[in-house]
Image (cartoon, rainbow, N blue to C red):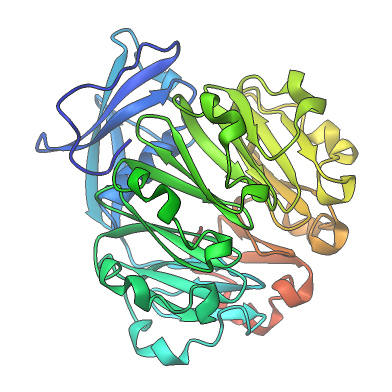
Length: 434
């Protein structure tokens, strides 16, 4: 779904389960349109509306009914094969946000400034651009040694290792306005602009050079996902474009015929990509044959360094990939991942380098994988029994946002699992983890 003015020709939505979706402003102006599968979660449409209207608080209505991000399209009347949703925009309240960095976390405060803890070398040294980070920052994306801050005016500020994207001077003219989203991998960044084009910079070997697919990234891109060394972009027609290291999924030629249409989500771990195509998993660089029979009816996929976790429409979770220590083996918590039909199932799964954390509908958190990297949350178990609304991750730690505005951290101390240095500022007032 494009966040720019769409063609007058309606998209082809004849494929089973596919719906033509229109996002329309209160005044009747067309904000975005495209095709989505009926299993698509509303949060994807909230993201689309937010990209089109950056910095504003978004409310979606279907008729007079207010929609929530947790709902799916199949809750709406699909009899006509098309759905029109009304987008209401309001000035967003000033809020404090929590972002995950390479080996640290950063919180954006109400005044738009940033507080960080963890490894200072993971983009922490921002003195050269400090004057540009005192206000107006709405998102921070950080890779191994650099960061990119998206501001409410659509500009991007970068700092850190030049080789890893801290120096964006080669594309500076394209980052002055119009940017609505920034994705990152180990050594590069990719910015989606309001016109659906993509701008990349950083290490060419890590996906910073997209010249080989430049003609496919001029328009129509709605989302970009990354693993360690490659990017994958979903376009409004449901096709996928990949670039970066071929050994890490940047070359998707082996599954090209399956990525021409119908893709609604792409997730990456360190070495591969998995795409969700109308509830079926397609892979590029990964082997999911061991759980192939379990990968029907998938609504979301996430990855860590070498494993994937798929959330199914019944709320259960299937895992596959590398060694059990990376989180591919979830048998130790299998009893907690078997149920969840909307109300009681897994609502979100987040992966870091070698572990996963699943948020359930009751607000509790289930973790598995490498204990040292956050797979063991026993030290804070009493704080993760209820009230958790979102989880962020670094390469070796997790941070959970609770409904009272506090933050709980665990995992490798050096990667932000120890937040004692910032504890006083994390007891209240944090309202979003991105």
